[in-house]
Image (cartoon, rainbow, N blue to C red):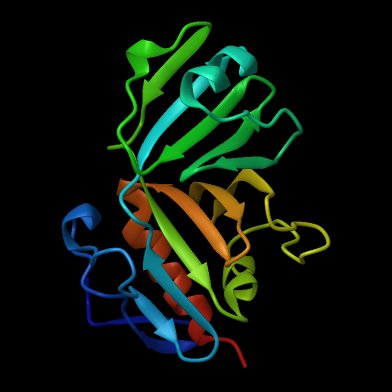
Length: 191
């Protein structure tokens, strides 16, 4: 990746050395990939175990110790785990601890931990940065904390979750460098 990215708005600094395999070049959680002081910062999320769940919410929730949300586009948290509603019988479960999919009755469970990674956005311009590539209305009245959904950012499919602290994006690893570069460009174009 070049040191600068050029676009119709001019040249902007590229995000931290992402290389060809984002998983190898991302800094540790908490270290910003890029930041516009006083406006937005983008950091890798802590290393999480991710399970895609399909099936009976009561059985799956009991197996993982979290009540799965049944309201559309909502999330639930318990201890350090989070469950994101993705469809009528589908959730993404995020946990700092390894979870064994073989232990789950009443549904299908797939470990997607190596498929995707998380990005955290915070700051007063986080929603504006996302709005540059995401078609959703991200105003807090339309997309409040606790809301989550599948959507796109640019041409990449993401899972977007608004937390009390900002936004959590789940993106496929192969699209992470693209998403970060697009966010870096969008964040530099603000007032």
